[in-house]
Amino acid sequence: MQDIFVTIARFQYSTEAQIVKGRLEADGIQVFLKDNITIDTDPLVSNAIGGIKLKVRTEDEKEARDILKSIKAYAVDNNGQSIVCPNCGKNEVEMYSTIDSLKSFLAFLLGLVTFTLPFHTRYKYVCENCKTEFSTKERKSHLRRIK
Image 1 (cartoon, one colour):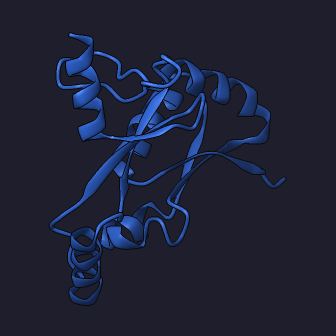
Image 2 (image 1 turned 180 degrees about the vertical axis):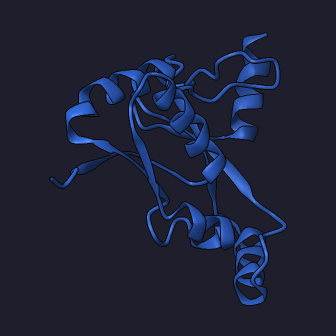
């Protein structure tokens, strides 16, 4: 009999996937990670191959997704406080790396050519609720206006 697995999550880095894998296995759910060795060997290919896939058995999918929902952490600041969207006020905000300037693009190209990690990375926040994108600088200016 062949076990059938379903992908329930994707991660950019294997450390994130390992943490979630441990949590699911603690609840008795068998977990399989796909492409984690490839990405550990060359992290630059993570986005190109779709990240690390976390797979569970089909019969465990609902329980695993419920556990994932309960532990999904959104972005927090240095004090552990949830980051709030300046548009809708929800705290369902994720942080993503982005290439939106010449400097970050050149750093990406240099890393690609020399097989190293980029030395300059820019970040942005994206609200999962209203899809508003805002930068870390915009967040700081928004916080100053609130005070």
